[in-house]
Length: 187
Ligand SMILES: CC(C)(COP(=O)(O)OP(=O)(O)OC[C@H]1O[C@@H](n2cnc3c(N)ncnc32)[C@H](O)[C@@H]1OP(=O)(O)O)[C@@H](O)C(=O)NCCC(=O)NCCS
Image (tube, rainbow, N blue to C red; front, top):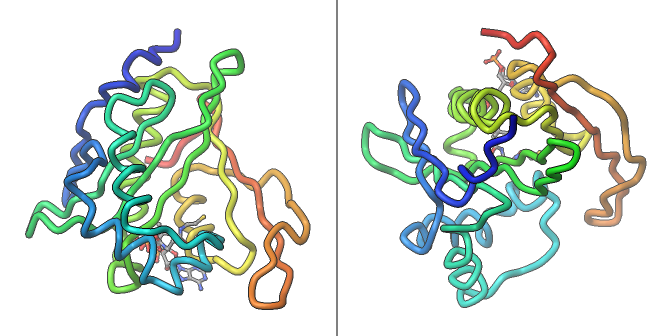
């Protein structure tokens, strides 16, 4: 049974080094850097649009209470630094599925296991607590770090959107991965 009523007030999730808490206006400074100033991150997430500060503030204000998605700020408990965001969105109630996305706010945070640690908590919440059957995601072919992290979470490659991203004059494929509630999940 799905418990989608949990989405409007999704619980805080805790891991060994992280606290995942409702993303919102309080996280403007970190999100602004993450969304706008980070060129590597923009390419890795295929973000063509440039957002104004007002657009980012408006967006963050809409997230708390949203009934069809869950956006968490990833906070490192050591120093209370907001190091990224992780999201379940595109709720499809009839088919018991959502989409997953994650972005750490800058390359200084990459490669230290934070993304996989945050993802594990969110996937366990989505499949185990919310009661989703399927969580899927898109990841660009040029992003082996993210693919490796997702594979560790139990995501399986299921297809490829050819030439889905046009970036700096080149076409790139987007890989589609998913994890089902019935899949074996790595511990
Ligand atoms: C993708 C992201 C969330 C992953 O989180 P992370 O904390 O950096 O990743 P982790 O350290 O948990 O794990 C990365 C794994 O990829 C592996 N890896 C890194 N570079 C790699 C490469 N070039 N090829 C293959 N594997 C690679 C690492 O070795 C690690 O595996 P290991 O722990 O077995 O050694 C994070 O890097 C990020 O936010 N990147 C920018 C935005 C982005 O790419 N978002 C995803 C869009 S789909």
